[in-house]
Image 1 (cartoon, helix red, strand yellow):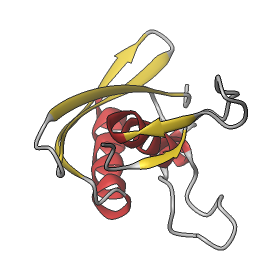
Image 2 (cartoon, one colour):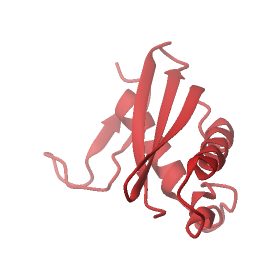
Image 3 (cartoon, one colour):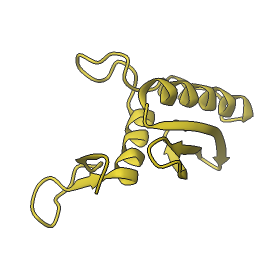
Length: 122
């Protein structure tokens, strides 16, 4: 039986109609992506939801930027996603893209999961 039930991200049509649902690990992964890619203050009536990674859009794409993004993502996930324990957050810079790699533990099951999110700041 599923512990977490919700709507998948991105919003799409499911086999039974709209919207497609998501459960457990998929729902947590979707939530992490939403938290990282939502700008802080972007959600109406929820000004603390989201991260500030977009404020780095005009910074040099180097290791220092990677450390700033990793620190921001670690803090925002600790604050916004109580279903996980964040182990590590690392950034990879490849040509014109920056990727955030998050290693986390799902509190309910104790399973270790990994997720890579492309941050469109370059």
